[in-house]
Image 1 (cartoon, rainbow, N blue to C red):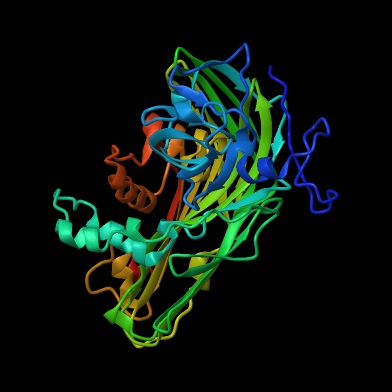
Image 2: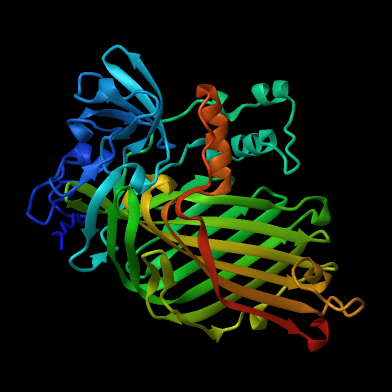
Amino acid sequence: MAALLVLVCVAGCGGSPGVDAGGRELTEAEFQYGIAPQRHKDVTFQPDVVLVEGGAKAVRSVTADGLTWTLDARAKGVEDLVPGKVMFATARGVGRVVDAQRSGDTVAVTVAPVTFTDVVRDGTFASDGPVPLDNVVSYSSEGALWTDEDAAAEADAASPSPAGRSVPVGYALRRAPSDRERVAMPKPVNGVPKTTNTNGFTVTPRCCRDGVGAHLRYDDNEIRIEADVMLTMKNPSARFHLAVAGGRISVAEFQVSGGAGIKIDVRAASAIGHLRQLDRVFPIPIDFSVPVGLILGVPFTLTANQEVLVKTAFSAKDGNVRASGEYGIGGTFGFGYRNGSWGAHKIDGPHIKSSLLESVRGVSVGANGVVLDFKTNFRIGIGALGFSAGLNFGIVVSTGVARGSALAQFFPLVPGARSLDCQGASLTVDTTYNVGYTIPAIVQKVVNFFLRVFNAKPIARSGGIPDPPKRTNIFSKEQYEPKGCQI
């Protein structure tokens, strides 16, 4: 089994960005852009893969969306980065080239997502032991177009409708989010950043010894939301085994240990009632990453990131609703794949420690409700942000709380049985998994809008096996009070 090099850094590591298991210090460039791949006798890359010599030293900058890498034009391999080739510059700099533009002594290379088998044709990769999700490096995509609520809305409006129609071309050109200035990716930091901003929300992310979660806050003087969601864990770690033969996945096993529970606290209020609601779906623009190191020359990274959905349903001015709950989870998260057969680890729970229903509160002359979905993704592979190619496992926690007749927005109630005294809460927990890549819908729309500039083929939301990723429900519960509210 291949040796596993774990790269770690704590806050006081002598000013160095990090060290490997053998004591070699990471360079500033490796810390910012990732470790370079190396050729190995036991690994065959696909014939269209181009390894950029120098790795991180050849990188000059990266855009916040992770799509455009500006490289030293003199680095060996850069001249071969033409549309259709696969760039493999570093652990984070991986993708199918859609455009390459030279300017002086640099080349700006724009890439699209790839699957792991787009890069590796043959090779077997595995961890000798658990990889701790600890002492993380936080990579931010704040400033990417999909974190701008206006740009995201414009891309959504210009995307084809379900009926296959799109807005007029003139409108799309005037409102193209790709016309907005693209900014450089912020420098990564050791540990967890204090706050980040995305889609009108201020987010305080949390990771990793005690779990993965976030505090969300939105306030535009009309609608106010605060929420705390946490997938609680105890010293989480991961193991994996991935075998590729002839460009096909033959074995894929991924497990994340340390599951403990779910904590939820949701508070929402509206000064304008039914005149406007909030409906947002977005990724939190932070990757919590642990550089695993080189395994047979391939620089793997263990990453956790998060996605959020928020919807409100207020029927009267000055309405508010609040609820909180805690649930226990036991067992190991993860999945396995061999010879065409899939299986997922059985999760114990969730077990109710404190009920969402029992905590529902709200004061209003009307009815109020809020839905919050929170997805935690664990990934191990190559690439950056949601474009990481490798093994992916997600836990989706969906909650709905409502008071009064707004329950009709969330639960199937008996006609005539609704009243302002009626309240309800729901909790659903699903798991998702695949070997490949998966990105949120809004990221897909914004990226595809941008890629039109290069006449590039639109990217799909996911790639690899299975496609779309498998989704399994492990828990669903709806509660109502009084019982007359329920069917």
